[in-house]
Amino acid sequence: MSGPELYALLPLLILVLGSTSVLMIGAWNPTRRPLFLIGVVTALTAATAAAFWPAPLAEVSRMFSCGPYARFFTVLWSLAAAMCLLLSLRCGEDRRFPGGEYTALVLFAAAGMSLLSAATSLIGVFLGLESFTLVLYILIAIDKNCAFGTEAGLKYLVMGIVATGLLTFGIALIYAATGTFHLPEAMTGLGTEAGLRPLGMLGWGLLLCAIGFKASLVPFHLWTPDVYQGAPSPVTALLSTGAKGSLLAALIVVMQGVPIPSLADLAPVLSALAVLSMLVGSLCALRQTNIKRMLAYSSIVHMGYVLTALLAGGSAGFSAVVFYLVVYTIANFGAFGVITSFAIQGREPQEYADLAGLGYHHPRRGAALAFFLLSLAGVPPAAGFIGKFGIFYAAIEAGYLGLALLGVLASLLSMYYYLRPIIVLFMADERSACLHRGAIEEHGVLAFCLAATLLLGLYPGPLLNLVIAILPG
Picture: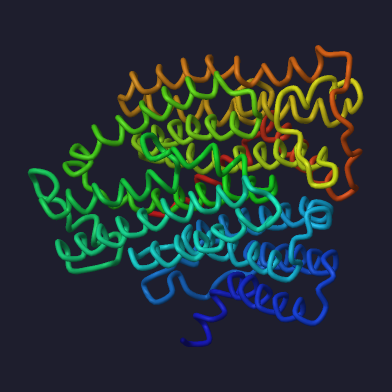
């Protein structure tokens, strides 16, 4: 690999080399807090490099882009890793996470998510996806004293192996049909004037099965609530945002290369996945009394929204997807950050009964949790409203009026399951559990997420303009 290529990959190299260095330091000095803080500094350094140091090349080895679009998501996932590590400072001490290993895995996960977001080749998609998936197998079950975590890790591992097999076979069929792994040529070569080639249709079917698992689309969603509940909240926040968001970022590049006749063959399947995800996710979320399981089912609904915008395509659809990924990441980290800040001796308040009266006893964090949930519901002035508006507008403009109406109805239904924990927070006089007052780093993450959610809701223009400017193609 040449010098310019290495320089173009500098942000990723900072994450990978930082991960390796922390792992080696941890073998000699396993003190958790310094290792976590080194990881935070490494992630922020990578984000700074991605934002301010331009790459000398547009693409590396015809596998990974180094353009503004790829750098944008490198910044986002590096910041997500930094927030995950900050939220883990007290949580990791209470639950005795191995400091070096945990920090190294989080940084490597951010590198894998950045690689996937930058992929311009089917091989790049596979390498990026499996890089962070293998890490998440370990992170989900990293708390050896939690039976739920062990069960969650096993479920994610078994189903993830099946999804990896489907992904590999799908890539092989697409290569057999087109003779190339490079995404623009591969997607164009799959189509004919009449639609998709037979091998291409089978390859796309296998790819959609693997994508459905990774993004927890119905009917590939069954792992989601158990994994969300069993994993530590900082890990759940990273899983629910970066793992899904990086895949959707790569799908934008994939969908841009699909010709219109081929898209006509894919549209019914993608529409069915979006409809099922919005309906099943909403109905299951209504019945939950555990906030992490509720957020798991609601994330399925959000993936249905995003799939609707992907199907709409065009500048409006793809920019709506990117903007929504940003606001969803911030709100989700905020919600799981509040849960983490309340944890005491490793025990997180997950049941609604555990939240009773917290709005009175901890008004700032109670109000912050309420605001994050309202953003996920799409209530103004939170940023989630702008994100959903962009998705439904793009769907209507592209002629998917039915999907847009279903999305609006699902958003109205979401008001019930998002307002339910808020009512519990502020309608009960008694505190049902003795919970922690929170650490300064946890309050810092919550303040950042709260400010960003409010700012993007009131003044989304700069981010929307940036997203439109960086879109590939």
